Image (cartoon, rainbow, N blue to C red):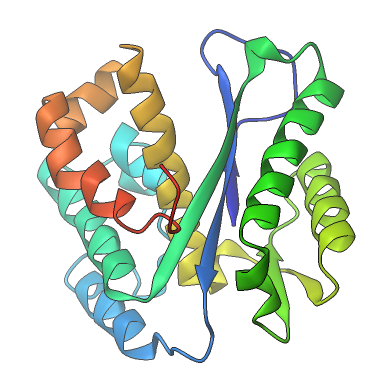
Length: 222
């Protein structure tokens, strides 16, 4: 799982908080798909072990600052193709920060949404002997929220701290977070210049990116 935003006060340039859970049955191996992705990276100047960061790819930041838009689109396209090639699904839990008076109110809003999702899909979670939640513990508030909700509702949960660079599906969670945030910004005409340049028209953005990943949403989620 991964998150976008923080628990601080509302700011106009960052109006949302969301986190994304990616579901993968570990009896379905993804080694071949990981190998395919790493082979694509060998065609670039980056290491096959490169850790994808969707936001910086779009905004031409960090490792991608010297890359053309064509190169960045190709790299992001590889990650989208990888996500679609493995047997996963996802759900994003989101709140508008201006509707939350403070961090406690934001925590309550997110907790209720996550609790409702687990309750609605309780049979799915109970069908597994063990559920492992992978998170880098990047935000203490979110770590506490996850531990509180999952532990209260399920008895077969364990938590593992991970490094994003070590898990391709963690990087996919980052991708889904970025796309879900992009969708919300597009609906409100709040896309930045760099986002507009990368995606082109909203039609192209929906066709080439958003619709490709939203097909992977957890059944019943809109």
